[in-house]
Amino acid sequence: MKASLQNRTALVTGAASGIGEACARLLAEYGCRVALADINIAQARSVADDIAGSAVEIDVASADSVATAIAWVEENVGPIDILVTSAGVIQPPLPVSELPLEVWDRVVRIDQRGTYVTCRAVGVRMARRGAGSIINIASVAGMRSMPLHAYAPAKAAVISMSECLASEWGRSGVRVNTVSPGYARTPALQDAIDKGERDVSLLENNSVAGRLVETREIAAAVAFLASGLASGITGINLPVDVGWLTASSWETYGGVRE
Image (cartoon, rainbow, N blue to C red; front, side):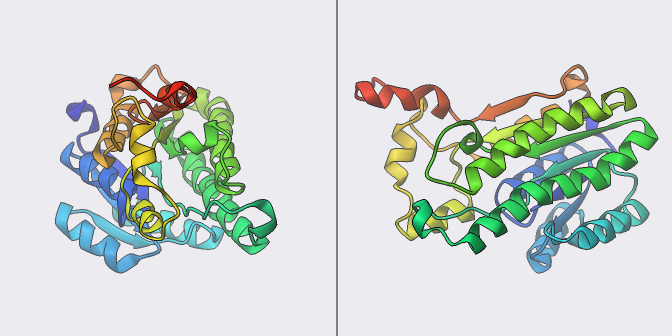
């Protein structure tokens, strides 16, 4: 896998922290030239300096910002071979009656529309060149019913969108796949835990492994899908959730057995 990623140009959005940072670091380990794109440009530069990458400011809610960032990467780093869309926001698990429409709009604008805008801007370039791999970061929230009335549907849309784009660009040599992480201790999740919006013991106990998934484990799945080892894989959604999807229904029967 390492050989097939050597000297490839990878653009990772949301790369300043969490899953995006883990993806950027692992792709750099495997020899990629990594461009770290984030709205938090100071933190992105800090991570980029640590892995000998490049940093570029991006706001995926703005099509103009996305276009500017991608043009900069292709001119200064190289034609993008790999795109990882990890930029996103989460939401509190509020009832519909208490969830402000402004919050709903922001989540959908960033998590769903932002992913599409980024895929479109990069994927069109890849298709013209006849090669490329796109990995969109969705979530197990997009695969189950949850009290996340903006986030869960937006992530479900990312999964569907990836399937559509895989068919759109497949004969142009572009593969499009999705990775759906389970609960990982990212800064966003830790913030929700600290606010009392998530009970970490419930998140851990409702998985086969009895723990949270590590961001590096998610990054490993991304690197595999980006590599030549996955040359025959496109249009799939790969959960990386330490068995949360498998185990959660066992709660009805008292949980996974020790």
